[in-house]
Structures are given as C-alpha cells and as structure tokens.
Image (cartoon, rainbow, N blue to C red; front, side, top):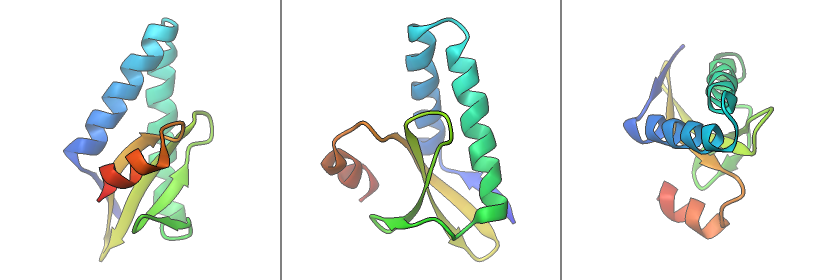
Length: 96
C-alpha cells in the first residue's frame, strides 16, 4: 500500500514542527522525524486503529498528536495530524 498525505495534513506537520522548534532548538526536527515514522508504520497497521469522527485515529508514540487517515482501495490517505490537547469539538469541526 502507498501512503498519500493531503496538503492539510502536511500543513499540520509543518505547524507542529514550528511549534516545537520554538520550544527548543532541534525539537521541531525530532517531532517531524517521529511523526513521519509513525505515519510510515500505518503501512503495517492500516485499519486496526479505532475510528473517530469517521477516520481511523493513530496516536503518535512520542508526541500528543493523532494521525487521522482512511484506507481507500490500495491507498492510505492521511487527512490530518492534530494535537490531542485541543478541544475535541475543534477536532470534530476540523475533520468534518
């Protein structure tokens, strides 16, 4: 299976990277590397994650972020990478 990320999901990653880089130099790069590794693991575990707001939700191993994706035919489409500390109503609105 191949993985495709929507522009919105890539923008979420850039925003998260910038946030952590402001916290400490180098942390943004670590955030990005960690989330990309998590997203790559979806190839193996696609579809086993619980469904929230109509998307499979995979929680990141090292950061409080969730990857929202759908399995469509032979493609895993990543729709969003969102901070779990946000209000769930905001997450729902963002995904619908």
